[in-house]
Length: 313
Image (cartoon, rainbow, N blue to C red):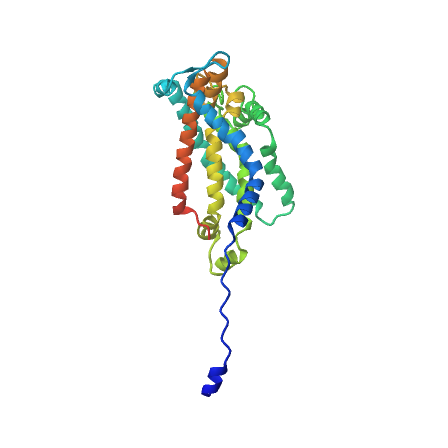
């Protein structure tokens, strides 16, 4: 190439600099985003943040919902710290979670694996397992109260046919909470199974087929492929189930009313009783705030620990 050709080569055009949007355009974009988000923000303020702030304010009052509220500062919290009944109710709630959470997760995973199999009439099976989820807690609780009736319930009759004497499910203090756990797990297994089934169907089949070609058995594929790739779904249902478990009330109220002898009284039941039976709304609000803080702390710990066992890729 000669020097003349080099000198006559047209200059290479530089890429045009990317223009930053003007201030007016950014304000229009922010305004449009705020307009689209405003319905959700209004709902969030009206039904979540607003009631929480109101509950915090009421927890600092001595109020019976009718008369004038009297500001008492942290007296309700001080009394709550020495309340043996509240500590017992919190212990019963934790006992309920200790039985409910493993049971619903294990059964939910087993049902999800079953529903993921290529079997005929699978749609019918899925609808059958999901049916308790859309049933009301009152109906489910009454059904299980009848099934677990110590005198003539179907469960104790079946145990009697094999020579086993059934316990007093909701009349014996030792069996009251297990009977509530059993009814709760039966109702929620379908919900957990549906979430886990969606996670199972997102796992690439070629990974399982490659593992099978390498000689991996069912247990090896479950432990090394299915469970790690299902961990985000397992984490989600664990958090949701734990939060719902701390708020257990309906099934306890219908099946045992917190008895016998307060053996199955939970925190939410105490909140309802103090607010509407004893007229101590401020004290009940303090209980609500403490329960909220407990749920928040447990959820924060779960979010912290999920880095060790949840795999998102």
